[in-house]
Image (tube, rainbow, N blue to C red; front, side):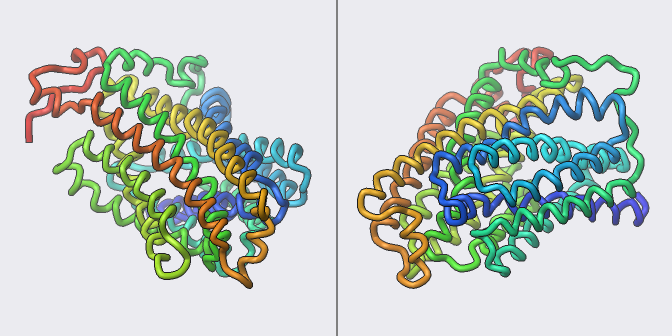
Amino acid sequence: MNPSVRGRLSVMMFLQFFIWGAWFVTLATYLSKGLGQGGEFIGRAYTTMPWGAIVAPFLVGMIADRFFPAQIVLAVCHLLGAGLLYYASTVTEPGTLFWILLAYAMTYSPTLALVNAISFSQMTSPQKQFPAIRVFGTLGWIVAGLVVGWMGIEHTATPMKIAAGCAVLMGLFAFALPHTPPKSLGHNVTVRDVLGLDALGLMKNPSFAIFVIGSLLICIPLSFYYNFTNMFLNAMGVTNAAGKMTMGQMSEVFFMLVMPFFFLRLGVKKMLLVGMLAWAVRYLLFAFGNPGPLVMLYYGGILLHGICYDFFFVTGQIYVDKTAPKKIQACAQGFIGVVTYGIGMVIGGEISGQVVGYFQAKAKASQGLIEQAAALVQQGPSKALAEQWQQIWIVPAIMAGVVILLFAIFFRDPKEAVEGGAQDGAPGEGGPKPEPAA
């Protein structure tokens, strides 16, 4: 790959994730403090991106892959998204705002697959070359959080305007990206292909079925972190919350680098369990920390993001790659993506919103959450507010704990199958292939 292409792909990744990181993290804080909305609406607003993840395969598979170059579709999606996101920053009516955010999600979600497609089409060895390009996306997310946190605008609509401006830049820049012709030109692509339904045959393998169900269920408590952490930290009086949350992406880079070391020693099942356990521990740290002497517990919960994400999601992708026959590996990865980032996060968004809304309603008997949050700068968080958030975080901790227990009992990875003298699926039928014991 020549330096010019490498440079353009790196800038593309940086802008792609700067856009997302600039507004998504602080949305709950803006909706609660800026617009006075409760947990139910905030949770529903956060389901827009997962809905986009469900619809995105249709837009990419049925349109981009068949008719238009990927860089052109990328440009159009970002330019349309820029207008929608800027419009969303001017809307205060909840019902209208939800539909605008949903429309925006339909334009942004497909671009996640498109930037990967453009990158892979230019690489001779994706396994070696892609990580060095993709890391610029993580850097973009980090810089976005640092900028928003430093500006002190988390409770305003300004982050959406910043993201919209960056989306315009990305849309124009996309026209200068390497030409990536439609990969399915002249081929008839079906709905079954787009949704990866050929991967359903893998569900005959009990362990793969447990993996899919476990992935779906763990994404429900996961949503609490993505949807409400920034709002929680601001409510607790943590300064520059958006900037401090970027420590999670920094730890993600570190644990991505050391993953091979742990993977060889732990194997699939233990890696997945460690990733799940990290989510439960994170919520307990949030529940029992405070912005004073125990503020390090908050920071510890944020730093666990590297383990939470890499050990679970990345290990899961590796497991799917090892389990699925080569001809349906892409379908299997797409299927897992829809299950986790789509269906799981939609359910999680609704449930997390209902849980937060329930505890907000209880708190309003004495003093409303919005009024408490507004007084934090002068008074610090009240005991009632701290107890309210403690109760909120214990819920996903328990949920994650139940999923961990069930997963530990029922899931068996390929290594376990061999050592136990049994296989979870016959070769050629999608079952894990036996591996020699380490």
